[in-house]
Length: 287
Ligand SMILES: C[S@@+](CC[C@H](N)C(=O)[O-])C[C@H]1O[C@@H](n2cnc3c(N)ncnc32)[C@H](O)[C@@H]1O
Image (cartoon, rainbow, N blue to C red; front, side, top):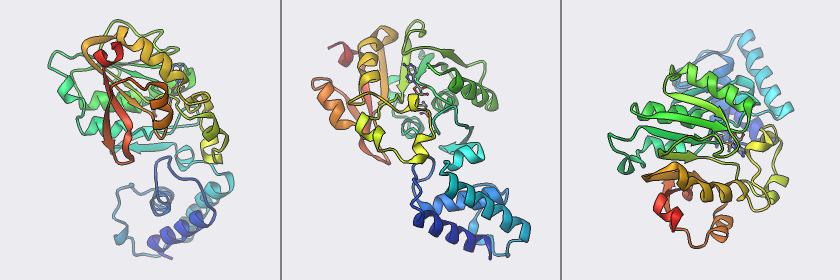
């Protein structure tokens, strides 16, 4: 069988086994391509239509082994390969942190924060940085920014440090252990936060793949808003007058609007929908 045929076979088997997706890929065919290319040690942007030669016995064994591992253990592929990609940027990942997939990455790539930044903007905060992907993407997108990357998990910060070093950003991105904004210092021109926001009912229904991720990274209390309540109350003290907070809430829009009915927010469209990421000004938070 050729690599292309293996990709189709893996996609079929992943679909049949009803593996959970959404931790790097959204479709079985994409996950299968990633799996086969990884097993063959080929770059993930390889044009698969050119892979017309039959796999060797060793290559077949490698693909089969990786497929079995994915199917039998239900471990997310990123934890097996120890690599994840976001906006074309590669990140080291392991079970100590959430697999990078924040929609805020799209917002950074699209420059949605640009109108609120100026040449004098120098400081940004990535709160709940996890493995550091958003801090790294911010640093790559905005060379003038120094970024504090905060998280309550020392394990996650160890991964963030690996990623910051991988991208040579140590002088500009600094990790710090912090419960919420406790260890934030001074005021920032931009805050980004992909917090734990999954409500209790959704947590109880999580598939095995998502249970492999740190619970601390997902669980947001009964209505998913525990962390966000505290954040919105405390954030203004850490914002310059023109600063904005870019916040991800995933599918929790109902809980969010119920918790903050009067808050004026600007939703930012992403590939996953129109109400999963928002921008909030300091003025709106103070009002
Ligand atoms: C949804 S994950 C986001 C990780 C990363 N920003 C990303 O997008 O991949 C949420 C992160 O919040 C951290 N966290 C949970 N409670 C926290 C708290 N009280 N203070 C700071 N960080 C917290 C978790 O350790 C986890 O890394």
